Image (cartoon, rainbow, N blue to C red; front, side, top):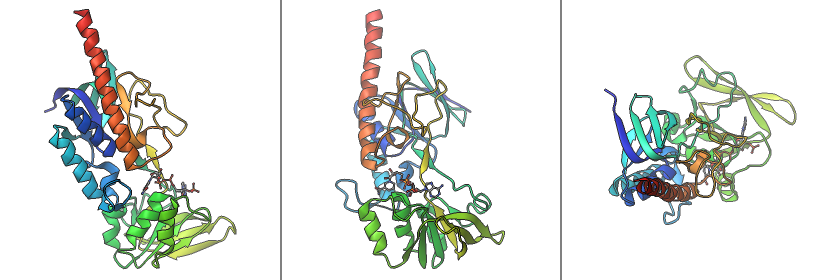
Length: 317
Ligand code: NAP
């Protein structure tokens, strides 16, 4: 049986931005629900270690995500496991329709849907997904104890998660298409100092090969020499960035060339009553700290937006 429920604010996505927005909206005594399709905490819940969230010198992503969740719930945030299919406007209502058939109406909606991993797009990737091809070290790393592991990418995620994977793998090869990393210097230094990590520079993966059941090796190509080589591995983890999950609003939001939602400094999108925060919106930095800051701003701006609707109604009466 499907349901239709009304809220002041509906938050789509339960990562740090969404949960923080939910905490502030609930604390302002508004009726608010956060819809999350996977697990509260979002991307942070599947991040190994976090060391740059103020007040926590060292905490696992799962623990930080769980703390965000319980803190927000303490103030009254409702959380539901729902995959959102579409958001649209019906006069002053913002309507969130879920794959389950359930509908959540809000006076305001906050989109905090983050992004999804970009795929390499090489032969073997789809075939061996879940059989040695993974996009989540914390979910799958432990399956590859004492195996040789490859990680693709040179950003913060690739280098940090490669470090995490050295807990399990006998050796971790970081395959990067250039000869210098994009990752922050402190993350790079730690990786260079890790005796289990090796860097394969100027190189791309041409194909992921296996025996039908499991990945066995990679065909690599050096971009400078054009030479191809084979690397025997037990698993490959792909961290080459992500695409924003920004396609839910029927009316169409203004976005940048990378499909990130454009907002102003109040987190307002081009559609009144729809706000965006965290990794899904266009901005310079994608850290937990600024997702949380965005969530705070979106919550306060949504509250002011609802007050303006209420004022308008009061003057009409
Ligand atoms: P990213 O910063 O966009 O890095 C993606 C990496 O993948 C780059 O090194 C890029 O190479 C490489 N790449 C892209 N397309 C490729 C392809 N088709 N084939 C091979 N390599 C490819 O993405 P991210 O590491 O996922 O990070 C996303 C955001 O989250 C960033 O803003 C990051 O700072 C943040 N983040 C922060 C932390 C932290 O602070 N602890 C942890 C994780 C993520 P080029 O360098 O040549 O472009």
